[in-house]
Length: 339
Image (cartoon, rainbow, N blue to C red):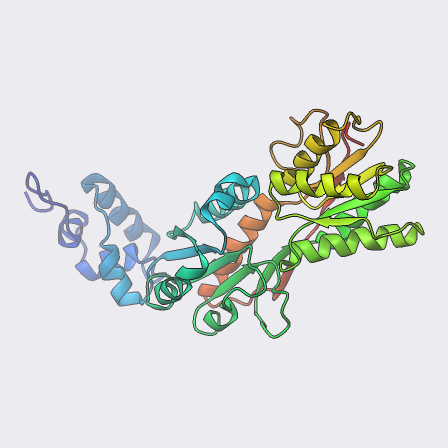
């Protein structure tokens, strides 16, 4: 019978056309979402597609449209960092939610310094329609150059002003850190330290700057700062250095929750209590913050929403729509027992 695939053969465009009683060109238009087909005909063709379990030939469609229906998420971090930091899991979840109702698939490229040329060739080699770049550092090979040839959306602004990029999605890191500092001041803390993040990354710089602004308003010293790399181990080491410098510290702001949890270790191993002796505030509101002992006061950054907005912005950019150059997402303080 016409339109019925034989055993072992895959259904074709011609079989769908025969079953629906329309031309091959009409089926192609329906498959490609053309608005030039009437709703009644679309319904008949879609019924035939479902009945035959027809899967469109993506390769052929890509050749016709010059689209791959794929986008890349580039993360210039080590594999260990990406899989240990809950931020990245939540960001990818948000991207996935945004792409779920589209035809786009996502490739994740975890890039070491040595792999940049390979990554750049992949991005510019016609393999993807656009890219998302997260967690970039100053000194990374410039993806600003890639964005001149390929639609790119950055999660956070580049620190280097020479790396001018067209589209960024960021959270208000500086304001969130101010909220953390203000909270510790309002709790009566006067020897307040900071465990800052890497200063070659926008979140590291902005969160330190926000904390400094808060303490300056309160006329408190801003010199009690040590630096970590956003990992728990670096937070513990930074806290030990701070306590060695100033044993009377009574409050600490850590630039992410992972470093805050590391600071817990260093504080408690000296016999000090949290929050009795030292109040602690983190940043992220990741999945471990509420489970810490005591539960961690932290600044909530909307990393899930950030991933969604980045992906939707990129899809619109690929489609040729006008999109905002910068989207800044708000932060808020979540108060728990650590402060």
